[in-house]
Amino acid sequence: MSIEGISGSLPYYSSGKVRNNFQESSGCKSVYEADPSAVIRKEEDGIVAKSHYTEDEALWNQYMKQYRDSLKIVDGKLVVNGDPRNVLLGKVSGEELEQFRLKLEREGIGDDIDWRGVESDFKKMDVNFDNAGYLNTKIDYIASRYAVLKDRIEKNYSGDEKELQLSRLNEIMDNTKKTIIDSYGDSVGNFYEEYGHSGTRAELAESLSKGIDQRVAQYEDHLQSSESYASLGDTTAKWLQQDDGYMAARLREDMEVSGGTSAQSEESGYTLKDLEVAGVYAAECKERLDNQGVFWSDNEQRLGLDLAVQGMKTDYLANQGNLSGNMQNLLQDTFQNYKDKYVDLLEQMLKEKATHFNTPMKTSINRQEVSAVYEYTMSQYRQSGDILDAFTKGAKHARSIFEANFSDRAGSPGSYSAKYDWDNFFDQSKYTSIAKTDSLYEKYSNSINRFLGNMKSDNHEMTRLFFNGPGDYGLNQFA
Image 1 (cartoon, helix red, strand yellow):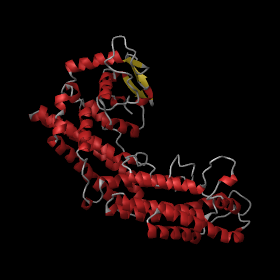
Image 2: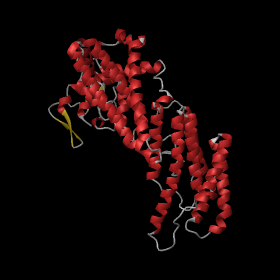
Image 3: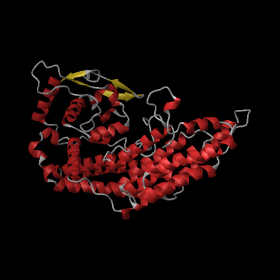
Image 4: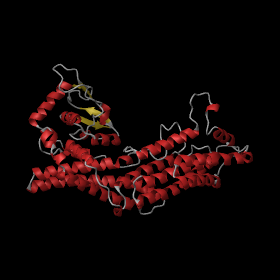
């Protein structure tokens, strides 16, 4: 990541913290602890830092801009040329920062646009499987920043110079928009194409383009009409008003207080919320497929149960996630193809593993047994709409099927490990000396309850919401 990112709008050092207060007396021991590694950070961290831009962070970034030309990234490592006052190596006193703030209040930072900072802050806006959950955060950031910059240009420039400045802003915005759309299509769009939805990439791209334009227009309208945003001039220091990154952050806050940005109509294809959910859902599916093979290889009942849990979550997400009808259909149709692909990959893995053993090994999946548990569990869910209740009934049904068939399977590879699995599925305590060890039933239940809790909350963090992820009590299965 280019060191040019150290501008008045991207707090790469936001991991540092100002202790005590800028107004401490002379000789204060307050320091700002800068983290050198924060210069090279993941983009998903960077976009969060961008979207939460405080006065302290604005002060620190303006301070650091003095040394921007002294810092470079060479082969992924930070190289310091000249004398950057050792700010990257440790500490800047609170007193020094306070003196710098007073200087900014006296002199300001100027009305000229820091195009170098703008160009840097609009870089690294790719959307992929790793950061799909930040799609709307990225869009809100560039849309609000664009609105603030356009307003500044229209008020401070005229004639040819105004047109030149607007042209530069639009060029940056157009390039950033193209980056978002193309990268989203290369990852998320291609995933849905692969899973049986020809033409979906183009449809998603068109909706994303319209959604970005609509979000920009909403911020422009709000900036012109919001009395609370306009009143910032009465209470905000001049230098902060000149920091377009800071003002864009305040515009986003003011928009949120007023009710937030309105959603696209379904007629436009997919809403921006649709697109973010589609990205996270695709990432979840892809991760499960890439890491396929953690199941007990001969336990079709467990496979059917796991797929049923995923199917119920998909259905719940589609119907309770405030998604458009188009996105509901896309997710549900995709899951059916995903489910078949998962079993195909598992069977392929079994065949490959069997080639490494001299003794006969299992090389196929009994899809009828998988389907029996899956369909039973899903039918319970369709009747009650209760995922946990349907899972409980499905698990009991799956165990009874396994136990009824076990005598016919005795001696087959891995069957006794599957029997142990089902024997302690609902109660692990009698099989372990470890206190309070969760049974598989409890692990599944906790995963389901977390999913339902996240769906009902306003938590923006959607990553790993749908199936399962780290911290789910060590549950390797994809529930």
